[in-house]
Image (cartoon, each protein chain N blue to C red):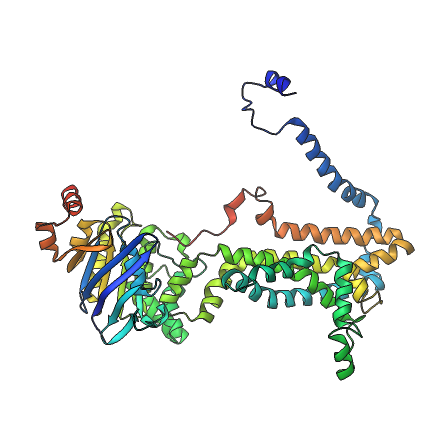
Length: 242
Length: 286
């Protein structure tokens, strides 16, 4: 079942830095979170995934409470049914990629044969149908990025989080991967949070764009709105440069 | 001295290397270690090499040594890996004390270890007394005692090596696996343990070598009974009085085993052997 993601009064402190925001992402919607390095984007992703605890606020997915700092509720990353594409990918180095893509299905109890078949389908969908026996070290940056996407989607999560999904890819492979990403994000039934430091990418991939600077949302709107009237000098500069 | 060094320095001398005397002492250190080994190789009766496989006393001791050291290794892995994981990952009060206690056998004189084992498991020991009274089972001077002594001295090597390995693991991989729904058991089995494989191999090699060579604690706690507790090192000590040539031969065999263990550990300690890290697996990042 697809359900909306809602972040209410979320606050995460880390050292002297604090991320504070409210954000709602509808099922089937892609919100691109864009901001300069150190703005708190990855902290946001980790908080939603359950890898970093909230200091305040609530995260809900439909009527499921993923975390409620005041209520003392904190679901483990395992229980959130979230698909994450990490910036550094984090493919398991000792596994063949078909086993890595099947990992989530196996962890959630799918029989070996079924998990292997579904992993094979996902690898084919990202254009790596013939590379299932490879290990991550044998892949190019773009191929590894595709595996990470396939792995996140294969276990059919309720929520998808992507951290700089085009950063590890060289310019030549970027256009193809952006198209692949757009296709799969459009097909994904749940809410998607996509994190990027590149406003051009945010505008290209997001249904809405949230600009995060110094731990707070400074602008939230459609790509056209943000591109036409960037509230932040940083976004304006980046879009002009791109 | 320093003045002469400065004057004698060539153009390419950055003046930062150690003084010459250090190199002399370093060479002396190498001689100190290598000379006895060379002596052993030269003095060993190579013509009697076949005795290693044929002599019944040797075969018995060899079988006992292999069995006891492998069982000790198994126990060390079974208990040592969990302990290493707990020491590396679970913060608890007194963790440093527990680690220090567990590593103590590495620096303890083995004979003291043997006496301590007697005090615990001996016929009138803290545990051994009640055990003998209740079941009639006595541990000292049995093959079980050989295994216990070997485990006592070998376990710390496994724990200290594997704990270091756990600390160096990339926790990002575990986070990724957790978001994929992996339970704690699955994380341990499919992410942590495979990541630990190289350090586990190194720790196991060290622990096994230590178990195989164990002498002091064994002879104190298990005695020197042919067929039951007389391991290879004990046999060497016996033969040194009866048939010194044979003692040399046995020592040569154990030297060979040690060299083999070192070869297993080469990536860890002898980084330069085959171009350093070249044959170490690449990480997960693209």
